[in-house]
Length: 406
Image 1 (cartoon, rainbow, N blue to C red):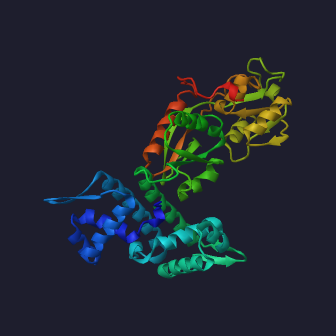
Image 2: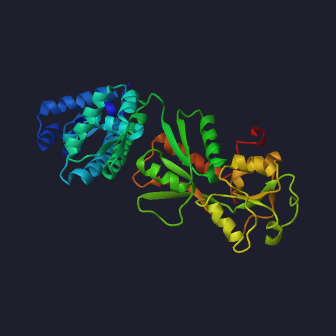
């Protein structure tokens, strides 16, 4: 089973050099290695991937379709690794000559596990081997990345920044393996979802992809946008699905999906159910469940009650907990329609009045500028667009998720 950590950085750099210079002989001169050594490196890489990467022609050497795919990902991988290592070791540092995948695997394992003991267990190595690999990495970079603290470790600021570059580099190589059909776990789509999208949009798109029997698996991380954005930058997740930031951010890009206004929600038994647009004075007579301070819904609630605010016995971001509280009390809350669509269809909850005027947050996806999705990830983005057609003011399709799910 080939993983990104089985690939050799020098072989990858050799692959890129052959493409850049148009021949193995010219690439060998540029890399200051022998032609047989470079040829052997390319052959080993082809053996690991099970693909021919170059075709010899009368006018030179050209990449095959598989070669182009690997070249694109390998180039992006080396760019991430070079940028990260040069932040620490200087602008002339060459990671393919100085670093190894064994070192990167140990370092990233330590970054994730937080201790040498846990890392050794996770990777199936001895603690001595992990210590040695991390020490050699630090010596190559000329900087301490890790400090021991009791039984755990502390990553320096430089260590954290370097880990981010390493993760992104490894993700590119994993994507190449996935596109070549070499991922033993099938392509994995890692999604970060905010409370505004996790109740309906994300599971709707996932269910559509599962119904297609697309060979992919999902990993979902929940949180608000601010909590998820660093995981996105680190490469832990591929995209965030939820509200879009109001202002653009240079290292991120967004894909808007739909807009809709928040609604006031109550349990089906509430006294206001069926009444037309009760005013703020009436709404203020009831206790409220409000969203955490970091949520857009909290800001909407504060705009709804700018001065005389009602009683707030509960602050909560979980729609499951909120739904249960609403069905057993006279409390009210603000929610996005798709958050409570299932409970409203089932008759557990009810909307009070019309959606709030003047407030239309945009729901969409946020991605890294440098991210290039695999075929599986691209298909999921397409299905998010399709699923969003069943949401918001321009809803045009019947969703797969129906009330019997409750």
